[in-house]
Length: 318
Ligand code: MLT
Image 1 (cartoon, rainbow, N blue to C red):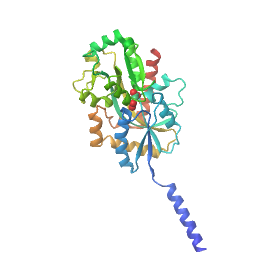
Image 2: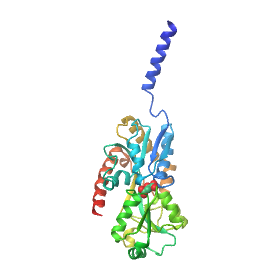
Image 3: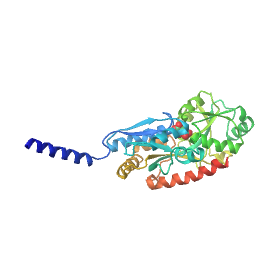
Image 4: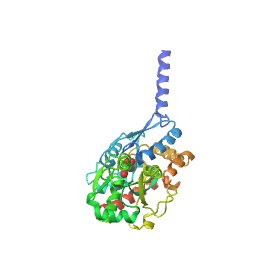
């Protein structure tokens, strides 16, 4: 009788403990919807490494590629909303994709809860090292005159590189052969190898190669130069002011994720972005680190709404 009563008490204690166990109790999966080594992956790994320390549990990166990032994003949207699957999305997956894919299997607003903005990533126009143009003016005239013979690399329809170069090509009236990759990590490898001619890509993927002189960079499509690449002119300075565009990376969780989990994830992200080492790694690559108000879930929800509206206009106008 006594042992049975003790067993009952122990069982109640255990189940109560489980109900109140602090999140997270086990590793968290962060889906990156592009290839390893590319810009989304790099930002995700810098953030996840630091967030893991704060959360006391490992955030494990899983690269789920395909369809311009929408395959991995669909997987994230359909994951169990328990705080153990999150994703690093971006301007393409949560901004441009609804306009690009009429039958998209997820809604960036209805199927996700925003966790927080991780970084802003300016867009650069880059080409293989041997490309026949020394500056942006020559690039523009060469692409205008020869686009049918050129290959432009991108990370799949709807990705950042695809949508931003759609904009560039339309400004230039260019119709290159558009070559899709599973991410701009592998696309950049082919650019360095000279197998493709040019691309529009996020600065965090490009800075080391530009510094090493293995590719040509023509301009940054933001209002200001980047401290990471101070010699690179803006598109306005270099003669193409119409091409102004920038991207971003942000963490999302599937809709229905418990608010306590979202709050803990956001707090860990906020802390990561104030960490000296994580900040330096991001800034050295040219990322813009959001200010504290810009890191909140509410700020990210507003950004997503405005980006969906912006890209809807841009894509429909093409
Ligand atoms: C990547 O991580 O490969 C990129 O974010 C792809 C892109 O959207 O251009």
